[in-house]
Image 1: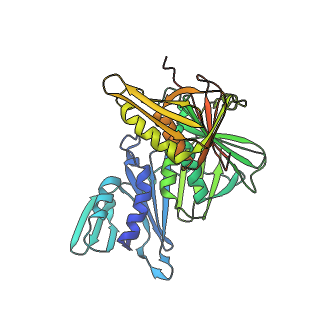
Image 2 (image 1 turned 30 degrees about the vertical axis):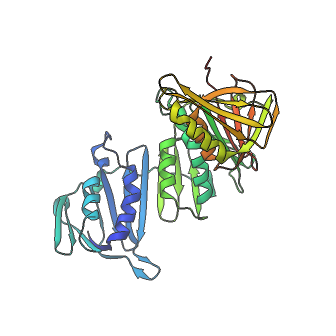
Image 3 (image 1 turned 90 degrees about the vertical axis):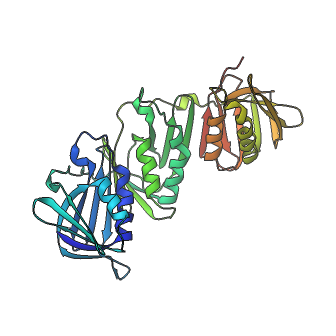
Length: 378
């Protein structure tokens, strides 16, 4: 195998596939990246067996030659070492040559590296995914869905299914839900040309986070295909395979209240900033708790206290407060995460009582719902 490639394009491909590389893999060859070069271009594959990312660099792009293929072939190279080498090469052109016994030579300018590769036939095969359960989402919408939900997955492996986001397809609607049992984030999206029937999958939060880093803020379509055990996200140049989480996701619909005793409408950015300030004191406490109280004349008070440091109170003029007086305590971090997902738009907060979960929606769009379980402070 022998080819020449523009260094910046090789780095682009490496940046994508390195996101799937882990030092904690049980299969030693997965600490490497598989390179396959044909006359069409270079395919790079990285995997930790849970996530597999494959990036393809075309030999020609927009009429420019990116890769000059001298001899086709494949090799598995040590991922972190190869990435560091390419990153520090002195010129913009790289030549890679594989000789007998997988000895791999990397040339750039007057610099030459010699590393020992591995047999590419030992690298695991990619899973086969049929096209019958396939649909498309614009990349920018997919990134929004991930941003608005993935932060609420559980960081604990005690209930593995809660470390993922539940995707449910039915009635031409995709419903994505994440919860750690203390908060919940839900996003609904209407889509055209969904596959027939209903299906539920739980996609690991880590896989969605890495996907979000790879896809751009464009309207390019991302093709999504599913089996009972795998999901594939496919763009023009990148494939991301992820295993799905096993187990039954809890029925979260019954957690969402349908009747409210108090409704507060206010500017999301102002509320975020007030909670951010109040959390300066709350942060010193283990639970980072702030309080929200409704006062007269549509005033909302945000407060926090720490026995060792002091206390803070701030009044905010809301747009409206309807219903009963409310005094409620909650995690500042959870509330700020929820408001961040709503991007500072005016928000409606529905309360059902001081110890019942409350929900937050954007004033313009109820497709995004955030739910937070309050904290008992008395």
